[in-house]
Length: 293
Ligand SMILES: NC(=O)c1ccc[n+]([C@@H]2O[C@H](COP(=O)([O-])OP(=O)(O)OC[C@H]3O[C@@H](n4cnc5c(N)ncnc54)[C@H](OP(=O)(O)O)[C@@H]3O)[C@@H](O)[C@H]2O)c1
Image (tube, rainbow, N blue to C red):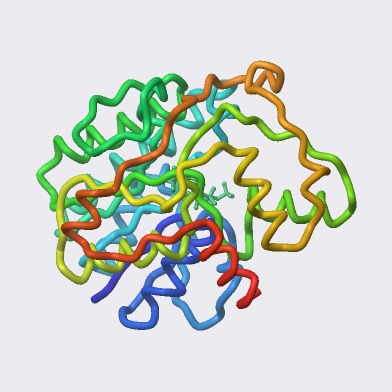
């Protein structure tokens, strides 16, 4: 199959391009001049905010599937510049839908547990979304656009992604490892819960959606439901770093611009049953990441 991946230089985009290129023809796309990790994968520079260019590439390349990994992912930045977040996360998705409705093809879109308010997580697919910040609102708006469209689609929600990819703007794992390796003290919130997700596992779930032509809404997340402080302790444990350098703090003390859903995270029973994919604990994922780094 011909599969076009947007946001291919991002954490999930890279994981998807690497995995899917083993069995499919991949057109990797991103806003940058080059693909940062491969010379052999076909690359097109594509800003999904540019409606004409989206249409042109989809017309030329005729992908049967578009995996949309492009997104404005800066949660606090989205509060400061709502327009920029909307243009990518909602406007860009509208352009993909519109091009696919003219040329045929299915959209696989990535969303987030931040569509929920975090009062009573983790959440299943059928629970009502209620975002508490603008990033979450844009992701929910994009989900609704897709659900209301006439094109074939699958949406997969995930949370707290981590992996070994090259261009990691905001990799929590790498940040913790770097800080502790330099014997610096770090303060991590103990009141934001989720189930951290290995980006490779999510790419496998996307691959399965492609294989069996699954449609609809799915949750994919890691096995452990924990807070960020506990996550940092696990990272220190696997990488042999000093856990006493990790101190706890609270979201209130951190004073982040965007409100956060506290008890977020995802229940993945439907995905386990219908997609029959592997789910990974943090220790399993970090161990494999360490071995292959
Ligand atoms: N990371 C998480 O913890 C997490 C959790 C839940 C859901 N998700 C969702 O998972 C998906 C992938 O996230 P990720 O962590 O892989 O994000 P990422 O690392 O930030 O990658 C996103 C990629 O999209 C690119 N991009 C930004 N604006 C674009 C545009 N207008 N047109 C085309 N490409 C554009 C980015 O380029 P620049 O870097 O130059 O902006 C980046 O290469 C997103 O939909 C995100 O909402 C992520």
